[in-house]
Image (cartoon, rainbow, N blue to C red):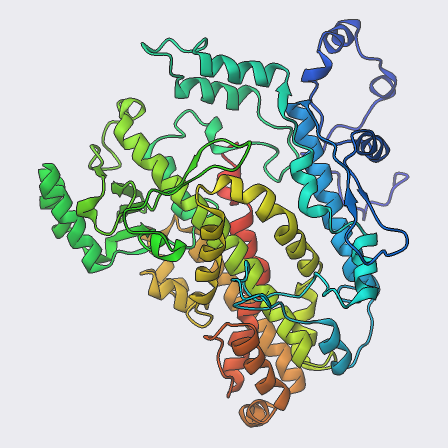
Length: 601
């Protein structure tokens, strides 16, 4: 027997090699050191700042706030500093570092106010109601529209002097400016030179001075950001066929937004057929009506202009001061799902303006997934249409699905639960572990991420962005969102057996979410049965005043009008399962790449 017990596990074969004395003490070669020394400081890649250096630089550049020592409850005075020049890598690191500090500031603020205490506190319901207060909705106290759906009130009223002192002492007022302040007026280094050369045409051999997509592909491949995210900086643009129909369709099944693809409505399908006839796409005009309805799916953003409050024919465009021009579109994509599981795009409405007849619609020249792919790279009208579809999907995904249906909806559940359910109640015990730091993260997003970053990217006016968020929230159907209900309403099987059909083998989201739903619901039921007797559970639930108050609080103050008025044990199981689903698997599915996508890299 050796020194170690033979009962210990063996070292896995895939584990990194054990360092040797030579490798531990080995110095870098002179050649490697010389290569490092030839890199200009403006082009050095790094992912973060030393905290002390970051503080010193902010002070030196006058990027700070100066509180009033006599009246700390008053708004601080801001420095008039500005960063004139900076590097691409340095700006990226500064933004990441600054935002992490903003999140920590809100964590500290919520800790002090006992909203999210670092150490658990036992509080009675009256105390919690005083701490967890709703924001004004749908109107602000001054009569203007609220920017965000109902959420935890985080910015104190002017008469809340003690809380305002804490708010200002933690630097939360300046979080609304910091991100924009750390972005320099001019970018230095190779990235800046490359971008300028693109604009001037120096890296393009096109007849005119425009730049080629190929140049952007090359840049993305060779100058991608340092790998600090879950996929280590990898992205689908690194694939040679990133623009193909296959990769485009994959995004609806295994991309970051696999939650909105649905069966095509009959009225929309009829519009596609008429568009094919008008455009001379005789194959599709004949073929589409013959395709089984349960094989036709759509990513449908027709509702965008209604949700945004835009006119039916209004161009979706916005430009922030000092930012680039930005456009949005309301694209509609028609897909056919084949028996072997392949999803194939048929046609795309680039920007739906009231009707397809008034919009530009492009049909795919490739009629089957097996058709030759050699011309895909040069089919520019079709590639443009797919770009429009991805632009629409990005807005729907990041704002409508991720921000609103994950973060905002869950926040309303959190606030309502803390205001109506005692800490010793079984509902609170089941739900609370899934809410760690959710409120402080959301507050940071409302203060900084949306007004300083997202609104620059979405391609619509600021008031339209906020209106869209409110639209998605008010039209969210809580019960329809239960995974079995959601799958069925979107045209997919909602049973394990149904999703086992080879036709749905690539819909990883549907299969994973159904499995997770079943597991979570079984857990919730078992936990509830510790508290309830199954034979009398319906009566106990119906007569529980806390549960009835909880439902009313969510429906009225939280504005989730589709939250059920719970009368049975099963209804309670489903409602709790949905809350956990939103907080955990649903959020993960729209926040991270799927494993199947990550394995491509």
